Amino acid sequence: MKLIDVQHEFFLPLWRRVAVVAVCFGWALFEFGFGDPFWGLLSAGIGAYCTREFFFAFNPRPGTRPGGGSGGGSGGENGGDGPG
Image (tube, rainbow, N blue to C red; front, side, top):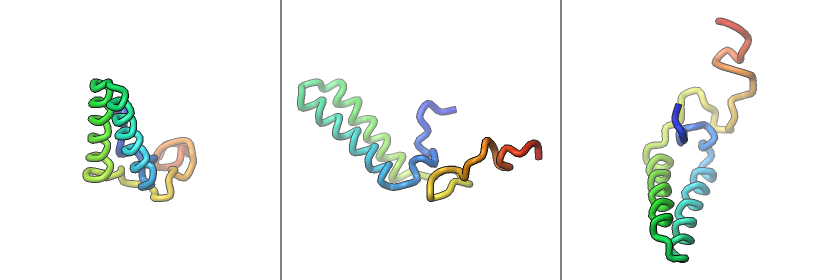
């Protein structure tokens, strides 16, 4: 299990990926503007990582739907109906 799974189906819509990257770089500008280079570099680094993962290496897991969500249910591939 990853701490932050950037390949999750939550990030399928493009606007969510753009928003996350914009917030990271915006926060970096905020920190640099108030004279705190450590937090500015940290936020810019997270923004750079998200840019790479969301726009160059984005490959969501198979079985996800572009509309978001997994179709409901309580579990795995068979919908949580039991073994099988």
